Image (cartoon, rainbow, N blue to C red; front, top):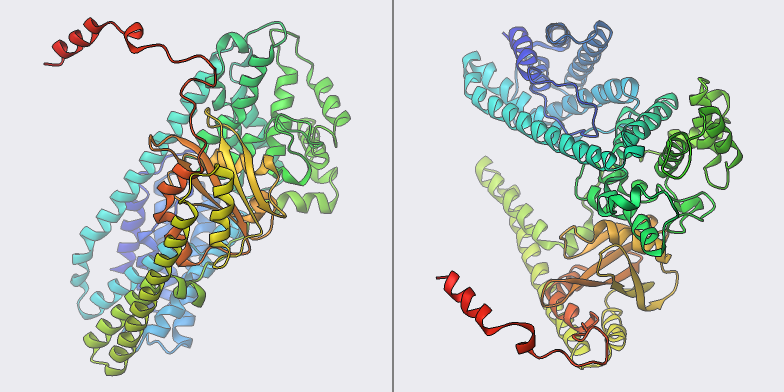
Length: 613
């Protein structure tokens, strides 16, 4: 029965597959894996391995997957099932039986072994990815596999009750992937429209994406990184939608206003991409695709402040620009452009990236021209997986988690008739409620201190220093700044600051441009993203018309305590009114505003009222 189920699930689950090379790598829940875990429990390692192999081969051949990949996947899944079955037995489990809570440890051992072997073979070995167990879907697969075994051991037909659940899970994933594909196609169409506004840049982003893809593949980067880099190249010029087409086609030099419009487009591109989770990781690289290694680019960012992905875009974008005819000049030959890249390595281009790009374009393996250290630098660019665990400190700052956990534990104890478990849960719940009360009291005091700092009508810089002083006893900051934001949303300046070791203005502006429209009340990032130690926190400041006019930014060794966070969020509107620059109603001039009656004819208002009836 399980062998038939493995085949049917494989055919059913993969029926919607569509070839789309995109940066979408969702944590996919696989029903076939749940069936294989159930087979391990019910049949043992060897029969489970056979079921996994047969199901994988049947599904792969049916859907036209290449034989090489089919057999590798079959080996990976059967190997994972076999190892999981051995660990299940070693942990004390008996094949054909499952009794909870007695068999909880063997079940966990089975799940960990299966998911680890699968991730190592399919992700690390085959796809060259960093190890990522994808805990949420993996835990769901293990739980569903255990549920199938629990029902089927008693009576095989009991499993029928899980079929509607499996279909619902599958359909939800199909709809999610469909929505993601449609979003990517819409962004791609947007990029095509931008390219087509200027005949000289027609299909520019397509060519840049191709150059980046070739370079990343030649360097043998993880497939997910290749996809993200390629789409960064495809979408890097979206911000040019704000540049007038006449400026893009102008044959003579640009004036100051036109250059300012051109210089804004990388940041606008990043601002657009940041709103899409699957391309947001490359938004920073897109923002910096007109920078130089020596720091003399659009925004003056260079050296170690440029992420490696941006260097891929810089060299690919420059190469296509040099080899394409533009209204103001003829394009270079490919070889002449490659020589320009070689001559400017270390000034305009990252030396190792330039060498690798030139080698790939000349048909040479980049490993033949790069040193081992340079090759490792580029292959290690993707961040390794790190499991985030809730620590004791976080439970102290978020006592509601402790209280909820205690309630769940107490209810579980009641259900299983375990008095000690119920008592432990009750104690934890009471402790959590007590800590929450303490946090609320401290938050109230912090709110009162902030209101006192905001009480007077001094200049906003003086109010800023009082606000920072009011928070300092409870939350130590190494730097704080009041950022005035530009009307176009693509830049700002620090109006007032205190402390040392603050971020560079370019890094601070870059971060805020990408996150300004996130909609979050508190924007948080690792300090390393801004070139500083600790963490960075920014609070958006808005006036009463909801217009974003500034930020209250901090750099600190750690996040604010929970009561300080609550106080800041509760006082956010008051902070915006007190710290934001006040608008000038007369536009900064000395002339008085024109009387209302000279601006509008009273009959216009009568016409409006008549039309609104």
